[in-house]
Length: 354
Image (cartoon, rainbow, N blue to C red; front, side, top):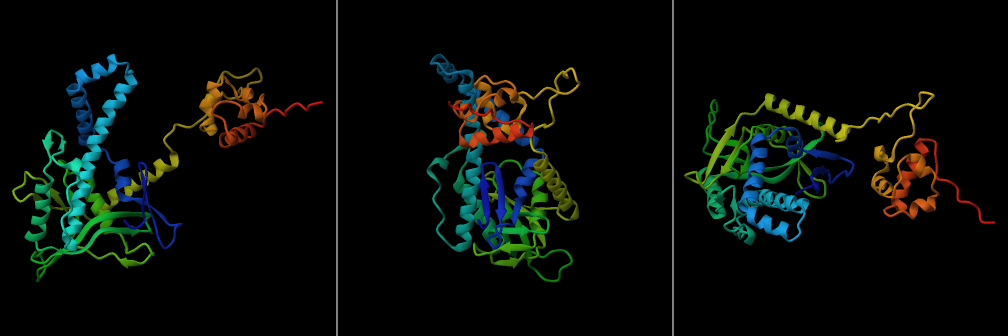
């Protein structure tokens, strides 16, 4: 993965030639802005089914002293495990694709994925891999790019496409000769979402391919169509090739989502604003409560636990007294000082020793 950095739920691409060029991820943009009701319902059903199936065991855990929060965390962890399992299955298929393209041995299935069950069915990864091989041979695929980082610096985004290759025997309408170059995305989950069209079109509109970690680049090749290779053992050949509609409308959909995403990033996830309390006799507002001051960061909860209520209570302490509080250290004292200064306050000076 050239230039891709994952930090928890966040993903960005950093140009190896210029680390100051940081681009947003196509899939992150669409995942953060597009509603996927089916996915939400699937996760909710997984969680509910697990809780029902493990009802007796949950009762045992409770009898042994587990709290309500412990039981909730236990059920949530299982739902996350199943989601991660589905993701790892997709990753394995990309490893199989790489092996096929490079004429390498097909990688062994990771032990924890063998006969794994997701969504009420045992996933046979060998059969799904056969579907990928059948796609490769049925269409006599001539691959050009795989797992490639593509970028559109002018628009500020990048992504990792699965495959660009030519199907030499396909003749497109209006073309005198055979051969069509496609941009393909591999999927092995149950559901295919309309956001995949916007994702593929965003990749298609990229202008450059990042070739290596040294910052070398090539121009993005033009493609004739975009498609999803859906790998499912229920299909006769283990796959279906869905050629999907793309074009200006889908690209505009992505750009609209990208603008929404940037607005969300700039606005942040919190409401913001200022808490008002009954005014003082002169009509002004009293000093804020510590619980209202987001700027205190991690220090806020430590100060509240220490019994401090208003920012004036904090100002009544010396710096050393604040540092002596549990949870306050050299790093967390800094936002305390900055917040006090914002209200024209500071820590009380320590009394001089006679």
